[in-house]
Length: 264
Image (cartoon, rainbow, N blue to C red):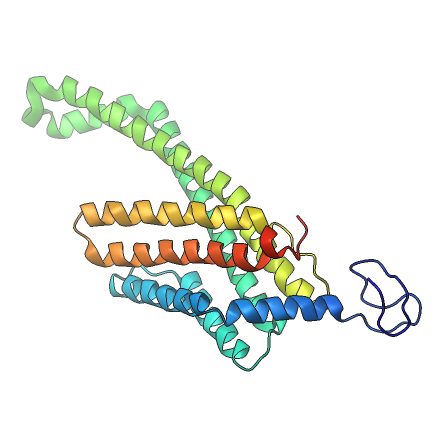
């Protein structure tokens, strides 16, 4: 990048001119302008509204996420800040930190699923005979000749339950490693580049793809809720699905190949 003060050619992401020592603000200004355009886009305002609606419906059902509440607050703060013509990294850092918190929470949930599944598996194989003998001594007279069938079915159900928990842990871990971690790295690079005056945004395309994946997952969850007659959860998950899809569209619009100011 050429210094406007002395004309010296510097490295693309240099913060100061190697010739005269002047600060190089071109990259910072370029990224700041892109961020302001994104934050002032009507689609971003709609995204914030839909996220607020999703959180509101989840509060009604008492099935809310503190992370989603914090994300809603920080996105509205970023939006309000953009109306003053400012794209300071302060609140973007909070958004990135909230995504990281979600990443950590997902790991905790994966560990709980895995440990619970392993616990039931070990417990079953170590004590199933004593378990069913105790059950039979208590309720055997009620089941009589059907106890053998009940025993076999219960064995299958317990094993399937344990395997299901372990599979959920594995799938959740994969989504976390490749999904939330990627989105966090993208968000983290945004505020860091704004802070240090660079324009080297990472994981842009991957973050966009994973937002679509999470949008589809939330859409499927909404469909399941609707089939079960839970309209409030359907609306909450449906709005969250739209939030992810719109986020992906915005990332592609302002940081995608069509406006490439990024480096994977």
